Image 1 (tube, rainbow, N blue to C red):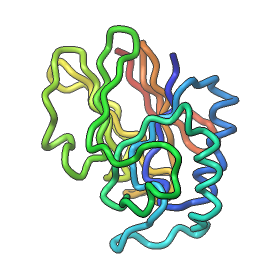
Image 2 (tube, rainbow, N blue to C red; image 1 turned 60 degrees about the vertical axis):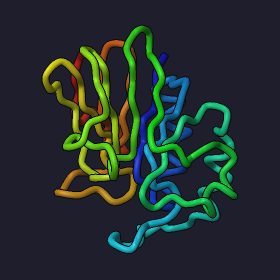
Image 3 (tube, rainbow, N blue to C red; image 1 turned 30 degrees about the vertical axis):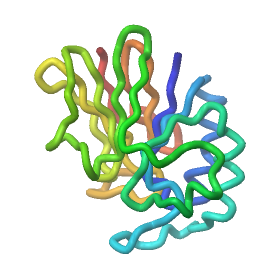
Length: 180
């Protein structure tokens, strides 16, 4: 199983539109959306292509394969227009025997981890910075931001599978990776 991980779209049409290309290129089975889907939030600049009304139908097209968590900019109003659940603080699933724990990052983060066991993966968004590292006996991942990257990083997304996590730029070039 391959999982497209994407975070912090913040209503960016480009970030939503690239999903189809990513699925086609990487042959992904699932989309893990790590929050902040439609709204940019008061601390962020408006994405240049901020068009949340156009993002909604694109994401709803993938409703059957999206796993999502609530970002600090996601609300009940967003849930009213999205046809997949987005309001969970944490979501857990498995790839093979590896437990994946997903959160946006504003409650649980690399500085406030949920309970992790040896070999578990914690993946989050929120900070708009790509991360792929092993810490103690578990892995900490972040795909970066699909719309408003920080610290001079490009717009990125991640591909998670049973053996590795790879972060790519929007022109599909490998940016960071870690093997499990």
